[in-house]
Image (cartoon, rainbow, N blue to C red; front, side, top):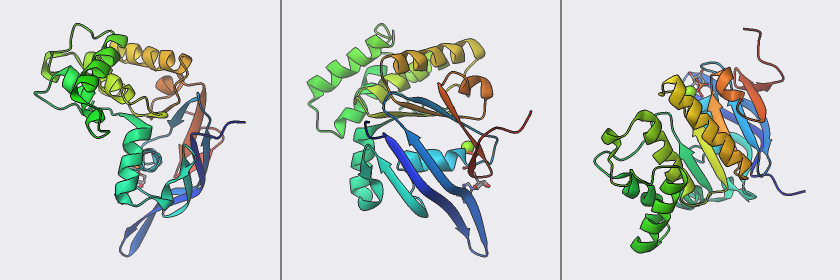
Length: 229
Ligand SMILES: Nc1ncnc2c1ncn2[C@@H]1O[C@H](COP(=O)(O)OP(=O)(O)O)[C@@H](O)[C@H]1O
Ligand SMILES: [Mg+2]
């Protein structure tokens, strides 16, 4: 059996608000195996963003253990964690988070800068990643010159350019019209079929249905079933 990409054991995240403590995650056990496509689904306030931040190494558990690609992230200092995160995870956000006034090519090449890849190779890999996503004729376009669906495809090309162990997507279709959202979901399914490991976070049950496994969050805990609508 291969090691899981994501392994959370007894993870809690408690926000300390002075007199008040907000338990955002309670005793989360979660494993994602290599090649799995898992959707984390739950209503507003259920802890999805908190879980995304912990899985994405943007935040740390209050207690419990997190191993990402077999590395116990609790043993890394903040700089080490940031480096490990940029090597291991490709992020896709609801609002694309592209650099404005920067071409698609340079947006996609940017993550390689932090890995010490030469400019020539950065541009070659960025071009190849954009071509794979059908954007070979949009290399010199800035975000404002692209549709929402195209911008999200640029963001996905950027997430893939480092060949990360995990793609972590937070409401990736949340800002898209339904046809463009469907295209982006079809793209995630293709990436999954090509062997990518994907965790997709959403409040939308139709979006979650694109994954091959769903994890339901409710009041910070994992539940077997969502409440009836
Ligand atoms: N930075 C924070 N400080 C205090 N409480 C927070 C913070 N972020 C989230 N919370 C609380 O934690 C709970 C889970 O929030 P969140 O993870 O944002 O859920 P979701 O993304 O599912 O809407 C909510 O009760 C929210 O109010
Ligand atoms: Mg949220």
